[in-house]
Length: 192
Image (cartoon, rainbow, N blue to C red; front, side, top):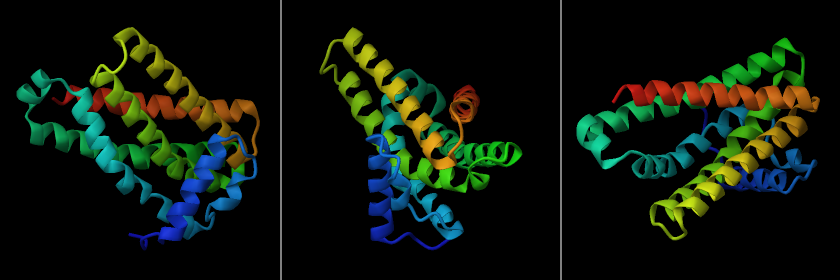
């Protein structure tokens, strides 16, 4: 496994992700785009994991926890989490290589990985607000839908900036993410 990223690299990656969220086309300058920097960006998965577990706790119903067992569900979902962090980047890199865009896609993977920290945090806030019924259910569902749309647009913007490809390629990268994520979610949930 690659060395831990420095605190400076993590904060720089987060700042780059934040700049991308603000539609800054120069945000890529904040990422370490070297091969080692791309490898270290996968440490974002470890940073996101506690929030992933919290989201899981909010998503899985008490009946599912009782029927499937906490350890079983946590193991299955954790395996799916690791697979997702590997499968989508591999699919994105393959796509970029086949269509000869984005220098092979490594810049995209780096930016995408660091952006997952912001996205996961946002999803956790939205899920917590909905679960605690801090706003009416209909409003919570609407907010969740709007946040999902904004996140997809954010990923599209990252794909456009990081690969310097056209809108069709960026759209394809987002669709690949949806297909991989949706497929993994169906598989993991079918196992409990």
